[in-house]
Structures are given as structure tokens and as C-alpha cells.
Image (cartoon, rainbow, N blue to C red; front, side, top):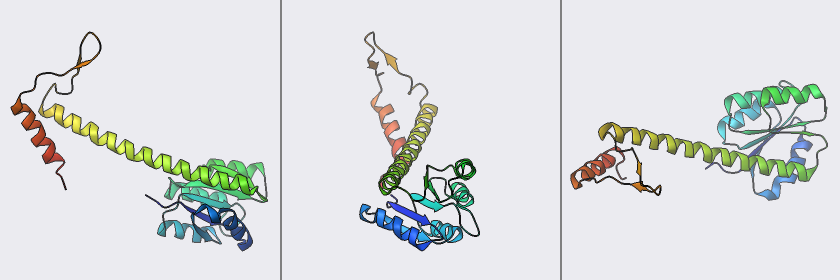
Length: 188
């Protein structure tokens, strides 16, 4: 599981320090970068759950940066900060970077802190959903394999009260099923 981690990207060191102070007692691993390129390098080197980026930065804007983050690290939750609260910047950030939240400078510390916590919770929930989906897909493949080897095994019959009626399975058939399952998923 990825540690609760946040990346702050802003070309103004005092903004990075201010956000650090807002988040410091939350127990997050906090990374920072003074430009988008260094932010991308950090993302390549460290697993991060939430990125907070300024919009107006030299070299690459926050919208462009968050768009790159969305393409290269699609599971990372993206938050935009801007001192220039223009509708164009907000629209670009939403459309290109699929941002989670948009804040203007100066921000409300409590709102920012809550947004980061909610972003981490969302990341964790989506990660659990991805893992559950993998399990379901694997189980579906197992059922298809069983049905292929033992036609009709996955067909369920119900009695008049709606309870599942299990067909009689011989000891030999049960032994074959167990042996096949052990071959497909050996104990480690």
C-alpha cells in the first residue's frame, strides 16, 4: 500500500512552506518541487497520492503539469492552486488535468487540509476498487475454467423457497475439482 503522500509544486518557496505547515501534523509524507519538471521527476521516483500544483509557473503551467500527471500517473489525485482566479485557467485545469479541487490564493487552511484528506481517502477507495476488480476477474476466469472442465458445474438450481439446491457430486468428482484447483492455485 502506498504511504499517504503529497507532492507540492510551486515556484514560490514560501507557498510550499505554508502548505507544509497546513499539512505537517496530518502525518503525510510531503514532497516538494519548485517547478513542474522536478515535480514529474519526484512522481517517477516516489509513489504519491495527491499533487497540489500552482497554475502560474515558469516553463510549464500548472494546467499543463496536471495534464501530464493525469496521463503518466492517472491514479494520482490532482489539486490546483492559483493566484489568478480566471475562468479560463479553471476550465483548462478541469478539462486538461481532470483536477479534483481548485483553490485560489490565499486559500483557507482548513478547506485545503480537508481537500487533501478527502483526496487521499478517494485514492485509497479507488485503489481498493481496482484490487477488488482484479479479484473478481480472476474468480471469473476460475469459474470459466471449472465450467469448461466440468460442464454444468456453475448452473444453480433453486427450490420452491428460493434456496440453492446443490447437485449430488461424487467423491471422485470432488477430488478432481480439488486437485484442479490446487494445480491452478498452489499453496505457497
